[in-house]
Length: 212
Ligand SMILES: C[S@@+](CC[C@H](N)C(=O)[O-])C[C@H]1O[C@@H](n2cnc3c(N)ncnc32)[C@H](O)[C@@H]1O
Image 1: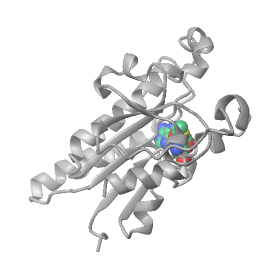
Image 2 (image 1 turned 30 degrees about the horizontal axis):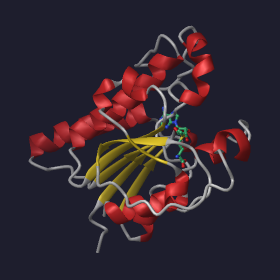
Image 3 (image 1 turned 180 degrees about the vertical axis):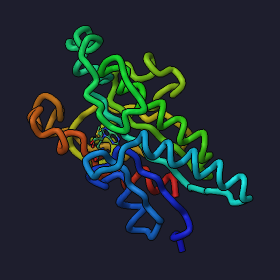
Image 4 (image 1 turned 180 degrees about the horizontal axis):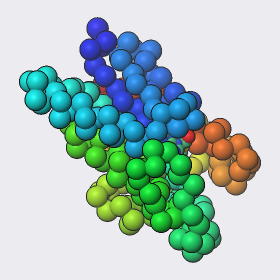
């Protein structure tokens, strides 16, 4: 029933955020550099497909866009490193058609690429960009204002204050006690990068219910 509805899930290595859509039969396309798909290449492909589609009278449609871009240069929890970041060279070695002055510019570039993909595809249902509380909307004001939640608002008993930007229906909060405390300080070590950035399951389900 949902197979004609496409969800583009950017920066989604675990598949956790897009899983409820996949389970419900949506056509889910995931893109993450760890799986060999670079957001800048996705952007180039999307622009190409939309332009070509326009010429041939074919409309490229997507229902929703989920995006969880890297937060290392934005998250408040890393604020003590912000000063040094401006001089850290970007380690982006993708298509070589795009160059960045430093790691912050690279991170900003990934959010701008996301916004360009949204602008090109004009999703019918929603688009949403997720990032922990920090300076994302100061450095990229185009994203607009955040709506905040904690994983514990949706049944996962820990905290990691996170903002959602975009156009979407707000999921309904059903809070539980955050008995495991803060994810950043207590739960997982900084070496467990993928586990730390995995989208919480309760939130993913609640977001899906509000945006199907
Ligand atoms: C904050 S994590 C989000 C993880 C996600 N919530 C999950 O459950 O897998 C950011 C993700 O962006 C990916 N990433 C970094 N640079 C990228 C790029 N140029 N193109 C696509 N994905 C990229 C990383 O591999 C990482 O999985």
